[in-house]
Image 1: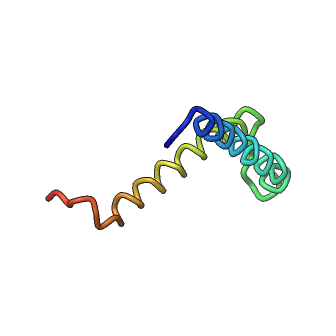
Image 2: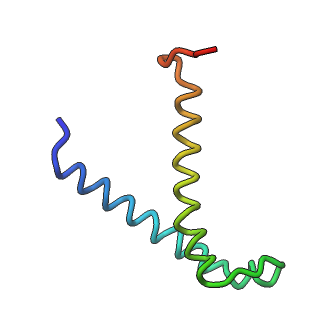
Length: 74
């Protein structure tokens, strides 16, 4: 049975994932600037926020496409 504690854990994991992604982009930001990806700080924040959304959506789409339990529509 799913309880409110499970929802709180899910929200916590979601927030932690955003912080981890932001931290990793921030760590590699100087390297990205040196090799030609001139990013400003607002662009780093946008990449950290929007990039996670794209990865989650893509992984869900791949899971649906690969699942034999979901019927295919032509």
